Image 1 (cartoon, one colour):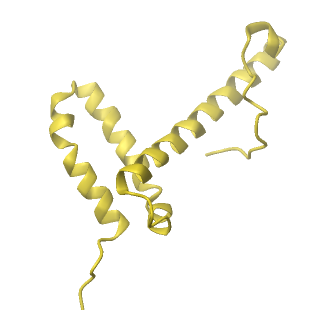
Image 2 (tube, helix red, strand yellow):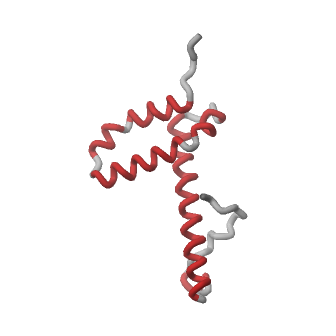
Image 3 (cartoon, one colour):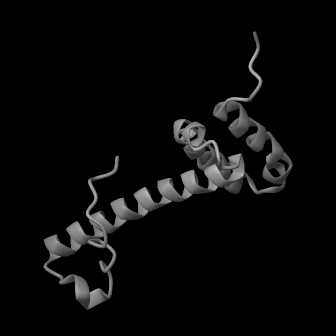
Length: 108
């Protein structure tokens, strides 16, 4: 028996294919960035399958936002570590306000 509904991985691949014309119109360096973004989406295929109410595009956008947020948190933590090592208070540069907004574990 065959499947009646496509898997989340299949839906992600369809969306990826839909974006190929757009990708070809980008500069090479931007194509590489788009590829990275779409690779991030694959990491969240299970969550997309679980959230069957979400459209593939919605789930892709949220997956991208999650990955970007993780990168931002890592950068904020790195900057804060460098600031502490240099002895510069966080408030002095107006940065670090979002570091403790939510208690989070380290993302890797």
